[in-house]
Length: 583
Image 1 (spheres, rainbow, N blue to C red):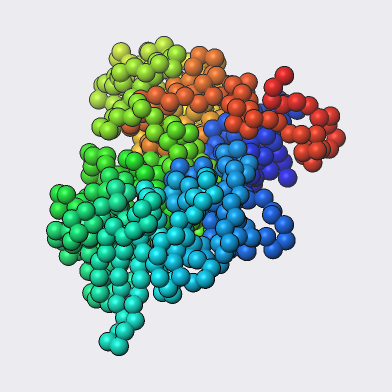
Image 2 (cartoon, rainbow, N blue to C red):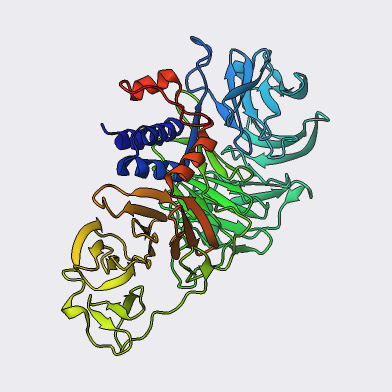
């Protein structure tokens, strides 16, 4: 297996090793293949995977519950009646606090990672352990049989659902407990419904659930101690109650669910359904700030639900989609401070994956989507200019001299006269051309046709050098650009990435740079080819490193160190160990 294949194989399950391997390969041999692997490593979305270290035989029950904090930085697990917490970014243990009976009685950990709730070992009452102080509170719930418990998002209250059995049948009671004061804040006789625990709004005010009788949506206002005055449109209510678990939007104003019809949200204040997000299939849904996070088998996606409807009446699309092999995902968390998304993989052990948001949560975000963009020859944003009109012919691109244009038919014409030039030469054997770009020295040309096929040409002999992409979606206009010396060509992908080829070796796989916020409207390489500037509908300019030295520094900043001597021997048994990061 070649180094690039090894890097690609490792990227999802062991991204740090993948980045270190790409870096070490380039340090060992500066070749087109290793440079491409390094560029991909510097831009890859996969940043880290943390798996709880082995605590010893039978220390932790397989498939035991685990929890991620609100920002995904703390992983909590249960080991031999101890709540063990891990610093996910640092891969180190934070604390281990023992509570008698925790393994059997644990029910939930608060989203701030400060408290754990568990049933008292003697079977009466609920205990809340303070993980920073090691103290406990007892809530006098009575018998713990048929009781479900869950922390509110703020961690200060607990929602308790109790089933009471009587001669006339069972009924459910909801209680909201104040943890610090150890008393009931609110109590509601829910009736005979014994469905899932209600969703709780982030501000602690609302509870929402679907009744078993007809699947009707119910919303309870705990502040006013009464059912909320909510009239939900029948179609929306039916869709919400047919979906997966109900949840609230981050502003506490909307009730939402992931359904087979997309992400459905009812706004409690406006009394209207919000625009649906076209999620394919049902799955896991979480809101964080202005964003929605979703998981469906095969992928995790980042959305911005509050954006205006697309101007072309097209379907809304996620800002970024990450392929995920996990068969089940337990938590999705957004860490805006670090610019990453984390998810907990459900399985025999607790694993947390960290994915880069690729700068999509930057402060330079614009809600109104741009439809065009351009960069000058130095990679600086400029106003997009229209292609010149040449005697009613559709111009795809103009050569660096400004005197010769390439038409959609592949012919070369004079910009001033519209007459054919170049001795009848041009692009032959391709479909109708839609985009094109000459290298600044005029020696090479990259073109795309209506089928999405992209080819590289020698613009002096008019010989096809390579088929860079065999075809695909043409629903978005592509962006293309060359480095000043023509050694690199960058091409956008409709799926939200950019591919970069070295033109001297176009048959090699390109560097794949995930971008998101598709489509890329414009690409601009700096004169030295060291950086790639990218304009997308909502971000005017983002930068990715292309020069191997800069890409290496980016990788080192993320992985903090290179291979140890032992790790090096595994991958390069015949080469002397060398330092790849630092002096």
